Amino acid sequence: MVGDPVLHTSCRPVTEFDDALAQLIEDMFASMYVAEGVGLAATQIGVDLAVFVYDCPDASGERQIGHVVNPVVAFTGGPADAGEEGCLSVPGPYHELERPSEVTVRGVDKDGTEQEVSGTGFFARCLLHETEHLSGILFIDHLPRNRRRRVLRDMEPYDWNAV
Ligand code: NI
Image 1 (cartoon, protein in one colour):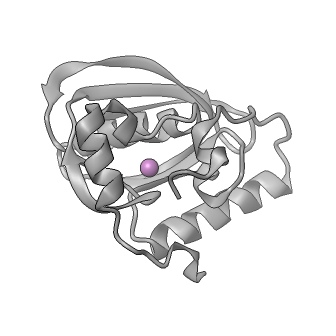
Image 2 (tube, helix red, strand yellow; image 1 turned 30 degrees about the vertical axis):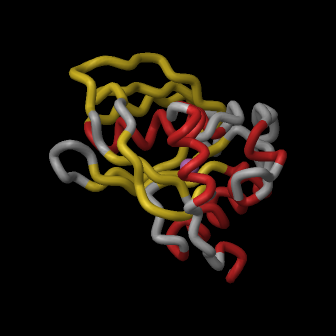
């Protein structure tokens, strides 16, 4: 949850591509599905490693499912998208936040194989949102101070630790 130090600091790059990493990714998918999210960063379950998972529709409505280890943003572009954004670690309503509509993230997979993931629309937003999580940035950090304060005040109680 927002306020937990692990969410507000840069996390460590993954250097061991072992069973523990594969298990972490499985756990993250399970947590994301229970919480009905479209993406989840390791920091959101208290692990300061650079990995995120996603199951998110792109601009054409196609479901994109996967994970990225040690992601860096390689490209942002396209027309700005003033869509709504939320975060499992900031429970409550979504908030409008302008984002690029095309994003490419570069990283590796759980076996250390290089990969590049490109997204459009809501999935582009997801790729940026999750990559930023791993640098300790939450989407509310992009909001004007007054709106950010209001979001934090209006946070809804949420049984995030139910599982
Ligand atoms: Ni988030």
